[in-house]
Image (cartoon, rainbow, N blue to C red; front, side, top):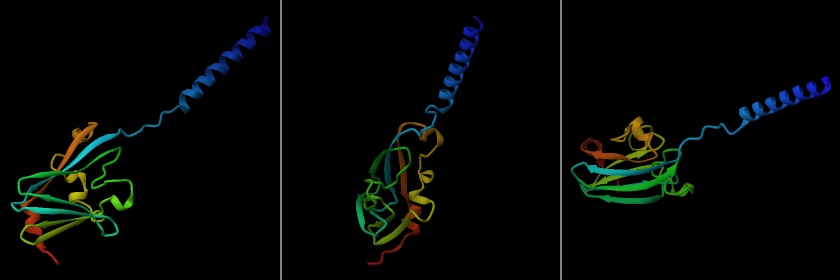
Length: 156
């Protein structure tokens, strides 16, 4: 009788240990939530403009004409991370710099390598922690009179 009792105790300990082991090694990896994000660019500069997007090879990959007071959606991403001017997973279709050409031959440029401005989603008009907690939303960036005032005569 005692042999059966010991055997049952070891079996019970083994089952409990195994289930505990499974509980601690199971898929507990925390995964960022997939987000659907529309990137909208609004022209509030007082001038019509053209937004030009370049890849890391300095090749133009997209162009958007935005009349004063109008807006365009440049791209929509479905991913865990923010991907401004990210059109495809091909490096040639990922924006690395942006030039804004105003209708009176004035320009301003932004680069991914220089922090802030158009490549930093925290600088977008409606960015908030509450907004980015959602699974689907739009980020809006206004091209303002200040951007126009910071522009220079375009090199052509």
